[in-house]
Image (cartoon, rainbow over all chains, first blue to last red; front, top):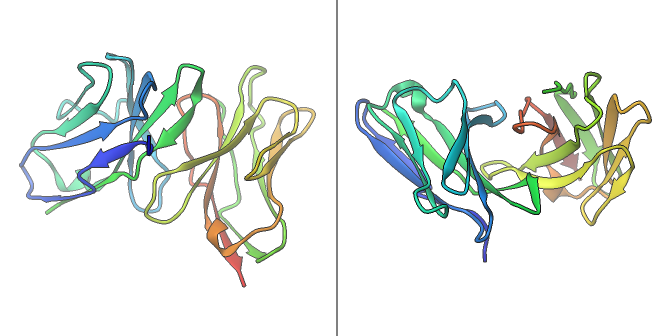
Length: 114
Length: 106
């Protein structure tokens, strides 16, 4: 297993369009996290799943954002009606039930909304 | 969740030890201290964590003061590849601050 993977790595879209990102965690990791990072700032927590259950959502996750993890494996993060302020790096991380607090991050998806 | 305070930036000479401080004066008794780093354009990378005892692994050492209000991450022989932003986080939802930008110079 090569770690957490995210696709696409880069996405350019026009304002108002919908985008969807995918995250494949390390296999057997039961927790999956989404973060957003803007230039010069540390990552900000968005939401996390334990298996297929979405256990927590940050208030940063507006109604235009939705995340799913239908089978408890990969996850998708969708942004509807994108705005220029959504431009950021979207990071995914996963952790094991043995050590739930040690998170392993993917390379991120960089979104640019024009 | 406890808040952490770190210097904005630090320099270190290649081959020397890099000592990165972190204050977490409001830490609770059962909260761990985690350190991650982020090399430019990559996702954060886990380094080490500890509760109250000092910890060492192949990447770094973590020294936690007896009152647990501060800690220091030590990279014993810094290399140019250690240039990154280093985040000190107290257990929670991994609330990242702005971290310390470490520049290792030849």
